[in-house]
Length: 448
View (cartoon, rainbow, N blue to C red):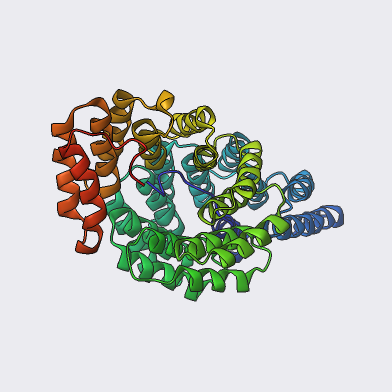
């Protein structure tokens, strides 16, 4: 499930910063009557360091932010907001235990700090400790039943637990309390997406963007819905908007490249992947996407170079290993093709393509040394299971696999199903295979 792992986005970080800073808006004073000039100066210095740190979080300069928050805390170690702000910087760096330590200290300083509890809950979501996160948000809501932030953070934990209706209820209540909360709309959109209610998800993501034009996550999620085929939506235009917001946003270029690829606009896809790589020469996903596009265009040497680079940068890229399998198969290097397909399956046991393509190679390879009907049947069966026995390509592969084992009755059975499933214009090609099986002949290298 797309949203089963919580990702701390810039929007969430900014929201946490604003929430923690709300202590000032509620009247907390940096100085008190009777303070000495020295204590006033120290308090003023702390505010300056804190303000610098907050700006640096937004700029992505997390180490510098932490250094400034350290100074703010040195000047005033009892200020809850400074501790929470430093905790947010630790979250951005993925240093979750340090973030929790800062939240714990904030709670020690002020046991009634609502922001400290739901901020700690946010960290626990990132760590996968969803029950503990819910408990923290519950405590925040006990302290302040009207805390919209505590509600939508608890909603995020419900999403991670698969409790989508509870997430929607929490985010809806958060929006009743704070009708202009972009984060609450975004989280509710995540829950609608997870439930398969794509139109409602699109509506919430669009509202997120209306309230916060810089909410890149909402643009991303709208595109993912379109890519999944959930609604009629233009992912290219969606990422045009994202790129206009941030011309240096590499992920948007990469995702728009994916959208162009899906539309078979390979030249435009390559241009976007190129731009993503210019922005980040170590961006594995862009090399993988460009490699996939080179394969589709028949530029196998270029595809080989990009796929190898993607694997160097990200050895767990199942798609890149799959691409290598395709490339080696075309080049006739079947040992390498088999090894690459198997590695893709090892990395992602639910990845359909390597199962089906390796099964096809094992069933029909022009070199008899590499044909193995039993393994082909095993792989093709797994591919059919992954597609709930509804994918024509996988069923066709299964028929060829059974023919290679000599089980022609089963080959005919599955090939007949395929012919029945495909549109009329595609039937002649599949009937050619069916006639072979009826004649007791395997597919082998004899049918182009």
